Amino acid sequence: MGFTLKVAAQTATFSRIDSLLERGRYQIALKELKQINPQTYSSYYKIGKIYTSIDNHQKAVENYKQSLFLEDNYSAQLMLGKSYQSLKKYSKAIAIYEQIIAQNPKNLTLGYQLGKLYLRTNQLELAKGIFTRLTVLDTENPNYNYQLALISFKEKDGNGMIQNFLTSYKKDTSFVPAVYQLAKTYTALKVKDSARIFLNKGLQLDSLDINLNKLKINELYRERKYHIAVDYLQKIDSLEPDDVFTKKMLAKSYFNLGIYDKAELEFKKVGALDPDDFSHFTYLGHIEKVRKEYQKARFNYYRAISAGKKSRHEEYYSLGVLELELNNLKKAMEMFGLSVKENNRSHMALYQYALTTDSFYADKKIVLERYQDYLNMFEYRDKDMTLFVKKRMDEIKKDAFMKRKKE
Image 1: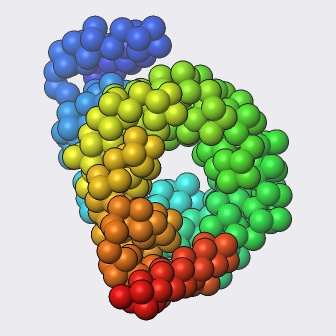
Image 2: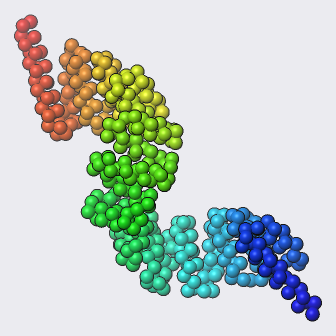
Image 3: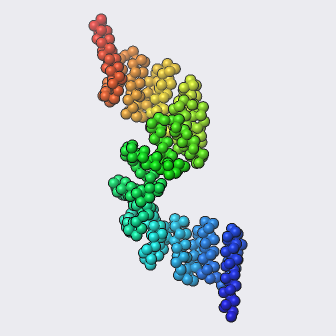
């Protein structure tokens, strides 16, 4: 009789606790659960679930372990594995999931989670094995081939990756992750028609998908359709404010459209969001140069050069153009020289370096050397430039010959 009353009382307590949890009053529920004496499998399990719901996974682990000490139960095992996964203790989560799968090999849901953990921990063969088995047990789920494609990517198996993404898409043509990856892959491979088909398909399925919109923006930017790009950028800016990619592409699009006030505003936002991105100083310099605010432009170019950790040839080149506009030939020549030093593959920098040297030096020996450097590097790059360089070299040689003749 006493045992029956005790069970009834505990059942009533659990019912009251469930009611409290439904209303979100977990603190009172926790207090009542902790007052149960002695604690049972169910009380520890319910305490663990409360801690899971408020993301206190360490406390959840402690209570699930106590629960399992009292009773070996599937639900507690599963929740313990999930808590370890949330704590990024992947090896412990894997061990629990493997134990459950060994007892129930057809548990597809847990098999999928275990496969993803294998992939996350770079156990590619184990991941491949489990996802391949899942494709047999469930032939319609697109996620399994999608995961196999991600494995192929890690293994640098391009064909396997594309085939699995395609299989995933064929199983469910509305599966946006596969559509996005196919659009992204074909874009990288420069298979434009296929890239456009999957990109447009993806946007039809989910017009607000951030990754698909970013792909579309890059496509429009490459095609110089800046007005349309701005429309897409404003859309995703409203969905994901303060994203560096969005702000930077919006700024560059406004710049290319000649809407300099808006471009300036967005580039300043880029600088605030990503101080390491020195290119915003460069563009601010470009805007000020267009406005003929040369002192400000020079200042921002030097800020970019000072902050830059990679090639700064564009900044030096822009300073060269600025000094040229101000007729500071010696300074312009110095800047073009530094631009060439930063990037000797820039034909424009070397061309301007030679031209400015020609304008600055009366002694043409060094000028001929720089024009020859241009021909050695870029004779076949630009027909008009090469024609000018050869013609100018002939003129210099002819002038030198005539000068010697007069002597």
